[in-house]
Each structure stands twice: as C-alpha cells, then as structure tokens.
Amino acid sequence: MTAPAPARTTVGIVGAGPAGLLLARLLHASGIDCVVLESRDRGYVEQRQRAGILEQGTVDVLRESGAAERLDREGLPHDGIELRFDGRAHRIDFPALTGGRRVWVYAQTEVVKDLVALQLADGAPLLFEAQVTAVEGAESAQPVLRYTHQGVERRLECDYVVGCDGFHGVVREAIPAGARQTFERSYPYSWLGILADVAPSSDELVYAHSPRGFALLSMRSPTVSRLYLQVPNGTDPADWSDERIWDELDARFALAAGDWKLARGPITAKSVLPMRSSVTEPMRHGRLFLAGDAAHIVPPTGAKGLNLAAADVTVLARAFTGLHRTGSTELLNSYSATCLNRVWRAEHFSYFMTSTLHTAPEQSPFDTRLQLSQLDRIAASPHAAAELAANYAGLPLV
Image (cartoon, rainbow, N blue to C red; front, side):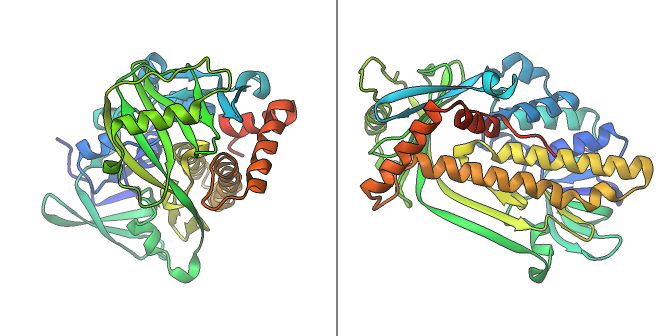
C-alpha cells in the first residue's frame, strides 16, 4: 500500500503514464523530490493499450533510469521496416542509414508496468485513484494541486507542476486560454486495430499502401500479432467479422509475385483509433509545464507518441537537475523551445507517413500517382531512405 503524499514537494506530476512515471524516475535518481498523482487505478494504467515501438533514444533513457532490465530481456530489436506499394516490397535498413541506430518492439503497457514497479519499490510517492480537481496559483511562485484520494480532499504545494495527464487534463486547462495556442489537424479515416494470438508473419513491421487503403503488420511478442486496417471514421468494430478482417489484410498486403501469405489466428481484441494531430504552444506557463499528450498528439503512423513523451521528460529532467545542482533556470527557460523543435519535426514526419500511405476518401488518381512517386523515390534514393530512417529511429533531443 502506498504511503500518503506529503503536503509539499518540489515537482508535482499529474498523470502516471509513461511521461509522468519516467520523469519521476529521472528526478528521483537526481535527488529531486516529486509526487505523482494518477486519477485511475493501477490495473487500468497498466493495461492501457498504446504504442509498441521504442526509438533508440527512448531505450537509452530507460536504461539510464534503471527501467530496461525486462526490455533488454524480452524486447524485440528491429533494424528496419518494410514498405509495400504497387505490389512490391522494399526494406529500409535503419542501422546502415543512421550510423547504427535501431528501434525496439516493446509495448507501452510493459514500459508502464516496469516503471510502476520501480516507483513503488524505491521511488518517489505514486498515488493511484488520486483525482486532481484543480491547479491553484498557476501563475504564482507556488502552485497548489487540489486532489481527492481515498475519499479525502487534499492539497499539494509545489514549486513546479508538470502535466502528463493528456489533452483533456487539468494542467493544460489550467493555462489561461489566452496564454496558449493549439494547432490541430483531423484525418478523414481511422485505424481498426486487432490483437491476434498468432506468430507475426514478418520479422519486421510492414507498412502497406494499397488501393483498398492502408494496412500495418506489427507485433507485441513472438507469439502475438498487432495489425491495423485503415477504415472510415465512425466505424464500429462489431461490423467487422474476424474473417472479413483477415481477408482484407490479405488483400492489402498482397504482392504481385504472390509468394507471401499472412498467417491467421484467433483475434483477441478489436478497437478503432481515430487519427489526429495536435500541438499546444508554449509547453510552459509560469511554473506549469506540459509533457507528452498534454502538449502534443500525433497519428500513430510514425510511431512517435510515446517517444515524444520520453523526449519531453528527458529534457525536463535535465533542466530540473541543472536547477537543483547549479541554481540556474536556463534549461527550464528553454524547455518549451527545445521540445517544440523536435515535436514539429515528429509531427511533420507522422503527417508525411500518414498522407503518403493512406488512401483518402475521394482521392483522385493523380493523388495516388503522387504517393507512388514518393514511395518510389524512397526505394530508389539512399538520401530519401536515410531521411525516413533517421526520423523513424529517432532524432537527437537537441
């Protein structure tokens, strides 16, 4: 059972997703006290299905924080992806194009479980079912988090507050509307995602452009496949039978040579994921900071959501450590600008992957030929392939 949170802390963290948990871990390692408040229970937090691709930099910081023991044992390192289009397949070799960088398949649920276990064992206070209801004094030198825990209303005085509680979170909303600007894009399609108890049909992820729409072959483990189909917005998963899903996946992954077959198995979960992009600027207001989905959302095509969150809190932890050791606020003052440079690059890459690989409603043959021309360019040009590989494997933090 977790101990009650103290009445005061240096950094109050709202949200126990990967961003909040990793930040707490990094701060604890630097001797900076913090408290994590999470509105949901532990079981819910550890079972939220999200991303499964970790960039090289995310793996590096998880190792640095001591949270990569199981990742190194069970994670699946990947040295590339395959693009399928016009009945052909082309592999992008990440290490050869990026100086040795790669990605790992390791589900966000597992990252969260690892971080939660470490935090509860020897980290700063982590309270589940602690609903933050308000941020008071957002523009003062000592903001206060008001929250309810175990039926009792409590308050936590903080030197700084970090919102890792998502787009609709209380911290983002505590920033006056006139002090923030949000840039958004919605896409005219969604993903139907499935989990299936069958070994993946490819050793690496396969991204397929098809006249029938986009498809993605991914995995969660050597025995569990994760696959996605582009579907119209508003699709009900119940309208898609298992047989219909497998037939459609077969059609979209098909190669002209006809020498590849998708393995089928029992489907254990179905869900529909809307596609949208969002960036809130700035990512700091006074002593309030935004990180992860509270600051930005990307379509999943570029595998950037979790990785951007990890990059945010790595930059922020370094800034707090600099303040703690030297008294300088220089890194804190540059936090928003530093992160937004990387965020917009990731937003553009995610948009590029999404718009290049999906078939939009009412898409003209001209638009399709432009997509195929771009994919041909990636397949033929080492420079174009290197640009894709560098963005996918993860750009430097600064």
